[in-house]
Image 1: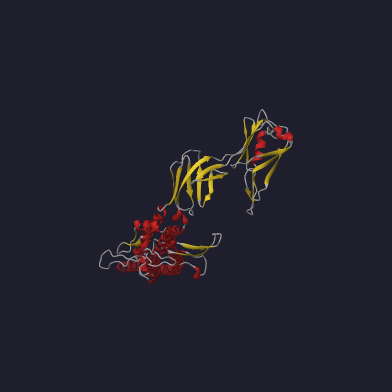
Image 2: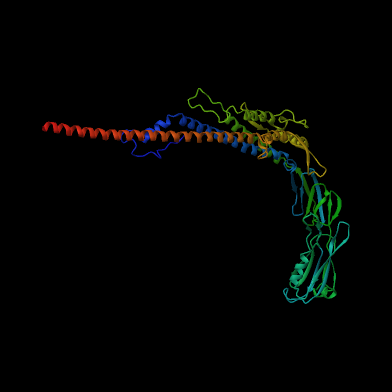
Length: 494
């Protein structure tokens, strides 16, 4: 509503005419400019309500999109549930590519690391050793071509056991440069225990740590003939009756996508199982259904035409909005689409259907679970199927129930800010239109306000002049009256 104030109107206005500031405001309110400004402000309020309604739909569409995208993740379908009859002996885990299966396993030997325990080299780990020269370490592992990896550590007279250990540990881990090139580390870790230098392989298996270099340095560090060398060993286990040996207790290369974790040696056999976890897909579909119902409830409320027969009749802020009506109709058709490209299944075959005349979407979880049990791959491909490059990193094309829904949703959500209208989302185009209308109306309001201000000044000027004229008239009348009285008085005396 336009706001009119008495600013600029003198408090003495109307002293003679009786026309007050309140009367001027009343006159202004009856003007066409005031009515036009009020109408424009009401239009802005309506437009802002419509824009806010679309913003709320955008938020719910984004949430719905997130729930639909969850149906395109391998983790949603192929997550595995792992069980073991004795986790203290061994456990199992599987990636999305692992097959459902049960295994019998017996652990005969655990893999251990090689180590060298040096003799006491000093009375304190912080005392300078006074050694100058080189210590060379041969890694327990080889490079990709099977060649030995040798590392040279330079010592000077100021080095202590602690600083020598630090120099060795600086070479332990693999490193990757900015170009993504990996340089293999020594895989030897140094520690100082009771003034003894201890070298330990960071990898397991039947490997050896090689020590070389200057004799004085080797002996001075306690790594000479008195040092104790412990050779590592491979793990040995029986999997479904097959004897296998590896240089790790985490076995990843025996069954595709499956990891066996060996925890302790035992004469007992342990049974390990992987089964598909259906709870994630059921939960993901239910989340999508719930989000859809929330979204469609909001859309229905926004498009509500009301009931004219009711005294408290109200209509939705977006009643008659063609874009929203199209979204409601298209989305309703897609979520129960009887055919999905690339799949022989449909929404009803996985338990998705309308459950009442109001278009509420429901999920028959028993039906979905049965479909998963019957053919989990078919269920996955119904919801989403993608063709990728050989590396699997780039998607060439995609199809399925979720992709069809997302294609529609993205028309309303996706767009490039500042792009040409043809590249903008439907909601962005709507928002731009609202903002443009508000800008035009505000420009009109400014013009109306200028007109009102001019009219206000005209009224002030007119009524100020009227007051002035009435004041002067009253003064002249007073003079005339006074003169007449004086003349009458003089005549009577004569």
